[in-house]
Length: 408
Image 1 (spheres, helix red, strand yellow):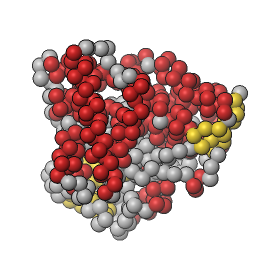
Image 2 (cartoon, helix red, strand yellow):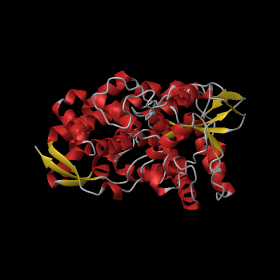
Image 3 (cartoon, helix red, strand yellow):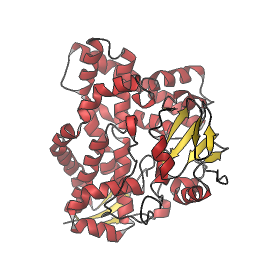
Image 4 (cartoon, one colour):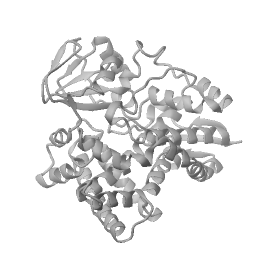
């Protein structure tokens, strides 16, 4: 075990740019104990790659989320526990397989490919006013609304009812992405859980009475056709799809565009060859990952990199750090949209590989292609050092990204 390097998620400098800290961690060793978080931390690619598929590590980490929110009262903790315990994200087999199988058909590459025309039309509609004005916050204009509108349409939520859903989803996401959430974050998350639950409960009841061609109806029918889902699991799965259906793509678009603006040669490379867009998306996912880490819990003693992780201990797998590991990626701190080998783990690995990976890739590709096709130039309209990064460091992204756009 290397010398301890303390990763502090509350450090504003780490929130803005964690990669210097990651480099120190990798240099210190393959596994480090973090006394601040009481976790074993793994900053190198080899261990992250292994542990993402390690069967003796569990994804059932709801109690850990509750415990790191000591200011929650009993009712708030119970509300969070009830919702999160129904998420496949926090389940192991066989429950994880059962839940995942019921929604996986809506996210197959073939089905997602059929969504391309709709995603392209929506992207064009969102970009048009931004380009016409010449200035825009790309997060508010495109990165936030596009993936959320797509998943909301798939679930069958009316357009006029989506604004509040986004707010509730963000409140829950902030809690989940914070290793040391404060009282205000926990209180807001509980409020959002209650309001989202009330709303979705009403929509689910409506689908029972009036089925439609959407994902919520599919989940309701799965419950009614043989008990494959409980009523609580229907609601929890709908809530998870709202959150997971847009968080990764939103930050892929924001982080990706910022990375390109900070590397003008790579932006020019992509502009000169739009066919590089799919490869560029993979590189952008590696370079500044929307999800920076994942946590797991040991269910039995496991030896990793010379230390024994005891049952019940939590481990922190740093995806963002693994993606800058020079043993795997050539010149890892340089953005390279032509990179041919890019075995990133931005979507996880194994049984919990991100169900929406194909959709996130499609949406990212569509947005970057559209921006370069419709804009003769794109420039950052803010000091990079002054950008406002989200406080929930697990989900890495900027709250706003002001840009100047010149139409072709």
